[in-house]
Amino acid sequence: MAGRLEGKVALVSGAARGQGRSHAVRLAQEGADIIAFDICRQLDTVPYPMAVSDDLEQTVRLVEDLDRRIIAREADVRDSAAVQALVDEGVSEFGRLDVVCANAGIAGFAENSWTMTEDQWEEMIAVNLTGVWKTVKAAAPAMIEAGNGGSIVITSSTAGVKGMPGTAHYVSAKHGVVGLMRSLANELAPHSIRVNTVHPTGVNTPMIVNDFMAEVLSSSDGSINLQNALPVEMVEPVDISNAIVWLASEEARYVTGVSLPVDAGFLQR
Image (spheres, rainbow, N blue to C red):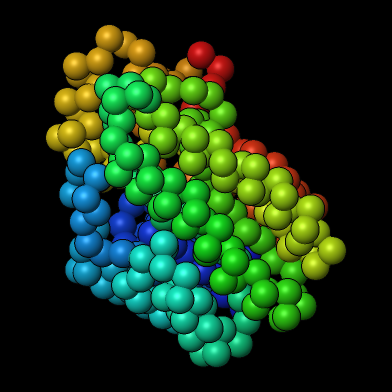
């Protein structure tokens, strides 16, 4: 049986590991060819180890093992020229672009909003909000020109729905992409391009499972927690990927402008 995305091409940012790798592999399992990128180096304000080149190479191997084509490059989501060059290369090679998975993001904490450094604020907003806009800015014209419609899925967070202490920069960025999504959903609807956000709870990835995050959670007063309503500590990356596959498929052909929680009931507590 052909996959739900057979013949489609998907762009995935932050694809070296974690959710991004899972999205690339899951989209490929459904028949899509992949255009992937990740920065693959450490950023100054990120307090946990970020992905490296070997991680992105592993994503390439996993996609190729599924007999799907992939173009993968090291690129900074904040670098418009680099993102545009990758999109142009991918569309030239594969002939189209149908799905955008704007997933690249970072996390961080500060004691509170007023003691957060300007560098912490600016780097977070640049990656998690402006980087999403730059990704869509590079991709949307190619999708429109192809005339096939398509689906853009932006990774927000449960922090894009509610406030959380110590993470004002993250919360602001994740709320911000919801506003961006709503505007894009209206702007791109005439081209049959749908735009939605997904809102995960804690996901079992290196962004959450690391020494820094463990220390933050263990030392907090309980105001920072990942407690879900369903009896699961964290969801798996594939749980988010499955939602993205659905949003990208014909099964969701009239779903646009939606904020979809994949949160094990976190937002209900």
